[in-house]
Structure formats: structure tokens, C-alpha cells
Image 1 (cartoon, rainbow, N blue to C red):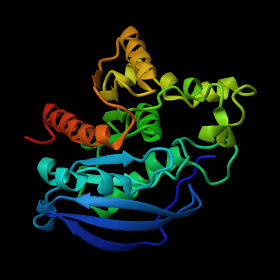
Image 2: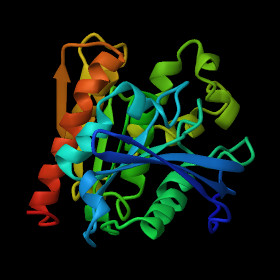
Image 3: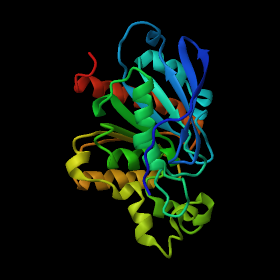
Image 4: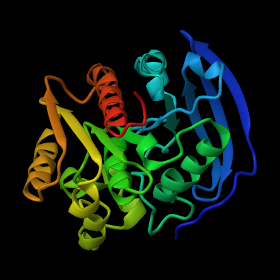
Length: 278
């Protein structure tokens, strides 16, 4: 069941790296049934004036959390370079970013697309419209970003994925339990249609996706590379404008550290195209 709620609690701790600032936020969420955690990184320029900023939402991979991007990539520095706000969301270790049909309070699609976005727009000086928002993620988070972004074109105009597990059915054969998806939507052999309906691979709507800015990339030595190629072919067949890029690399932070600024650059160009920034 999808739920929405107002924020009932918050605390904030500020840390700095370079000139940007990182805010550690927590708030009560009925969608995930706990105090949700965020890392919000604002550029140095945010300290003064009343300027409103575009926002990129970052989703963590399987087994990760909201601290991965600030710790393992150069995101702190990149927020200054691109003059944007970065929001790193705690997607738990195994949420896959959809609303679970089995697990209570595991509604991560609604949590990300509505609850977190509304919270950020309320607490920070954001460009609070679809053109001013982007969503991206890596691995499980790459699936989540594409799944949520394509399903909520009214919220996110720019949708991106790094090394995304874009076809749930493909990544789980034959050992589906490793990824814990069966705990969220049932056994794939028993509920194949449910699995298909929760996969990013099957969320492409040419009428809406054609009006979004879509980027996905993958390392050529990544085990998810072929499903990204398949996603590219499907979008091409459906005549949906998009950008697919491949680079040397594997499923690792060495690759994702290089991918983060590429995604921010893509978003910056989209903002210019939409005349959100000069």
C-alpha cells in the first residue's frame, strides 16, 4: 500500500569537506516504518543569497547506504563544481526501490518519489519542479532510479543509472534468494508477472519517457552490461530518445567515481536545455 505523511521529527548535524556542506538528516517516515536517513550536500554558494538550486537524488546499491557516495566518491567536491544540491537517500540494503507487496512498511518507491522530495523541497531552497530534479543510482540503486524516474515523469525530468540492474528477472536466475527480492514480492517462479511489473525493463512508456532526459551507462566488464545493452535496444526499438554509454570498467567504485561527474554533467546540460540555468 502506498502511503504519504508529513515529517514528524528531524535532527541535523553539519559536516564540511572542501567548501561544500553535508547535512545528516533524519525524519520519521511511515512509508519505511522508521527514521529515514539522508545525506544532503549543498554547494558553498548556498551559504549566502536566496538562489534556488537543482537537486540530484542518489540511490545506494545493494548492501550500501546513504553514506556511500560522500565517502567513496568525489561527490562533495562535485556539488561545488556543478553548483547543485545532492541528496543521498538510505534505500536500506535490499529495498530495490519499489513498494513491497509482502513486507510491511517497505514502500520505497513512494518514500523516494513523494516523501523525500516533498521534505527536501520544504527544507531547502530548491527548484521545486520536474525540470529541476534528477535521479540516479548505482547497481540496485540504478534499477531504482530508472524504475522510479520512468514511473514518475511528473517528479523527475532527468533519469539516470550507473551499472543498473535494469532487468530483475535476468539478474536473479537461478539464485533469486541472494538478492532478497523474493522477500519483497514473492518467488519469481510463482509470481513471474509481479516480477516483470516491478522491473525497470518494463517501465518504458514512449509517451512520457520521450519527454525526459535519460542516461544510463555500464562498465564493459560488468556482469550487468548485457542487460544494459538490452535496455538500450528496447528503448531504441520503442523510439525513445536516450543516451547509453559504455566504458572500460567493472562493478566497482573505481568505475562509479568516474561516472558521478558524467551524470552531473549530463544533468547540467539538461538544465541548460530546459533554460533552468544559463
